[in-house]
Image 1 (tube, rainbow, N blue to C red):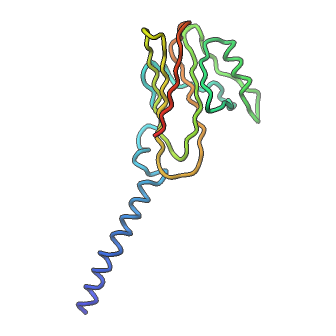
Image 2: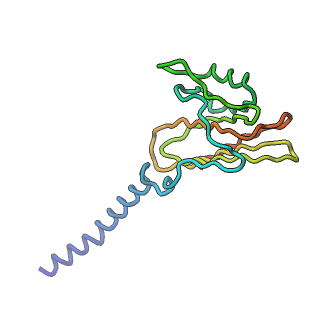
Image 3: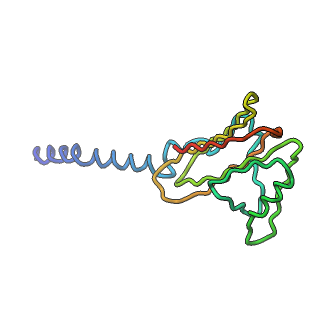
Length: 168
């Protein structure tokens, strides 16, 4: 009887603990449960006024390799040529281009993600830097299109905008 108890304890030590550890690892790296995904999904910093959706009832189909700096109503209307909706005519949200500029860059992410956007202004170099940092969580295969449209205070004439995308 004693040897069967010892055999059972040996079984627990050799098999159950590693299996439990493996299940825990799978649970933590799962798309929805990864600790890297806990907390706010999106965060803006720097001189960003707010995130902005150009069109509530449609999708703006843009190339992920493209970046957009929109400073006028005319440029914004050109963006409407890239809008698509299956159910209605696209209605673009209004922007006061006397006070704001619209910056945008679409990226692709797999699985679940967190995104940090930041815009910094360098007056000496007459340059804005829009940094998008993507943290992917878990081991999923699903693809997500992430539009990173933001409003910033009006960008003065003569300033450049650099877009930096960091994928972790």
